[in-house]
Image (cartoon, one colour):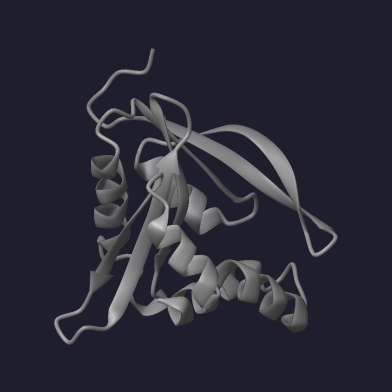
Length: 154
């Protein structure tokens, strides 16, 4: 799992951070201790997709964002498997994890056109913008949100 996270995360953030910065942030965010803590967190749900041979192909983690909203923490699919419906199935698993959620929010790199297009195809819209500090650098994000599929937005 850690290798998939490091690989896909580095592909997304590689243009923003140096290799040493990528390693440091990934150590903190994707280290064994951090991942173990997330699996123990009752407010965080995870789902994985594996091949018939047991190879990890993708994963999703999500949590609550208030009483009636979910927050998509991460959705990663192995680069060679993107575009085949796996991301859609993982996103559906995130919705199933929080049946009471009426909406879902997420943050994505502002210039990650492929990810933004994926989320738009699945009902998300850009609701705002913000920046996060990462290794002392401002990283621009698009904040996206969607109503639960099959539910009208209020």
